[in-house]
Image (cartoon, rainbow, N blue to C red):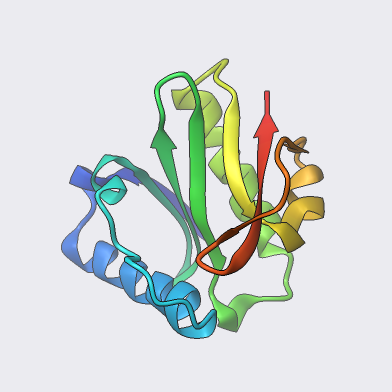
Length: 143
């Protein structure tokens, strides 16, 4: 299984197409959440993904916020779920952040049911639960 991390300008058209297809499958269709899935942040982001053959297994995007860094759109392809690949994906994502944004705190908006998952990587809750697109979220921080 390969891991890739590319800035938007480094992506091949086919790579971005496959990424967007999978993001829409998970975040719009599966979660029944109509929203603007592709946004201006995509142009500024690092796009990272696990790949098996020609198939995207998992994905994240990393965004420089100036004093902090964030990542989001974290997903595992439905076909590959239940294999603990989220751990590998997050480990690799955190390496990219450490290499490119050393010493910066990471603040994420996590779906509330994933606080234990992110907590295992050193993230701590820093907000109350709030709704984003009708899905409970909580802000979390890793220093």
